[in-house]
Image (cartoon, rainbow, N blue to C red; front, top):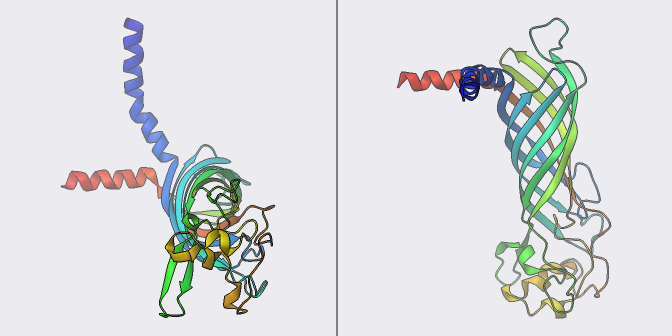
Amino acid sequence: MRRLLLLILLLLATMPLMAQNFLARSEVGLIGGGMNYIGDLNDQSMFGKPNLAGGIIARLNLDPRWSLALGGSYGRVEGGNPDVIVRRNLSFRSPVIEGYLRAEFNFFPYGIGSATLKTSTPYIFCGAGVFKFNPMALYSDPASGQSQWYELQPLGTEGQGTTKYPDRVKYQLIKVCMPFGIGYRWRLSRNMHLTVEYGWRKTWTDYLDDVSTTYVGASVLGGGTEGGMAAILADRSGEVEPGYVNAPGIKRGDDSLNDWYSFFNVSFTFSAEMLFGWMRGKVCEQ
């Protein structure tokens, strides 16, 4: 009992030191940049239609070479390839919310307080994450002239949820991803860091753009909800070439490749110890 009590007292005594050491090796900050989609509706272009994106990040520097980073981002991806396949005439946009945990490796020993440590270094990273998406398409009613965005997943534009295609189920809107990429970081001061990076997200879905397999025909979709919007948004070729309809079985997308998205950004991070001390000082002033 005495030994257990002594161990508990020892742990309690060292906890403030452990917490201070943890904060001294940690950073928190903001991210800003652009998000881009790679898939069936941009002809696999690396820089198709980028949109603004941002996020937050917290980093724990384990040693001068290795770090762990926990972060979250929000952005939007979109695509449409009328210049590549004019008759298909498909397009979409989707918000993307992601969270991730990743490991980072510095090519040079990075830090402060020693002549052997560098104040800047290139780095690579890889990890695991989860993201949420929701593809939508814009449709303008020729009769009223009004435009409206429609969520595509509930419509089952490739026959998901129909009796004729029982093997096609509606895709999930929350999926896992693998973030990886390259970057460069600078230590601007003892408490402030700047990073520039480009990262890819490998996903395990081919429906980020709601396009994957084949056309199923209006007869399958025409009796659906939203007044037949499933049939209208599944095959939009007639908007370009009046009267043209794709026959069931014609390829609508390439299901051999999953969709990707990328995030290129700049981030500023600050010492968690400095921020914690600043917040504690503000509280004490009250």
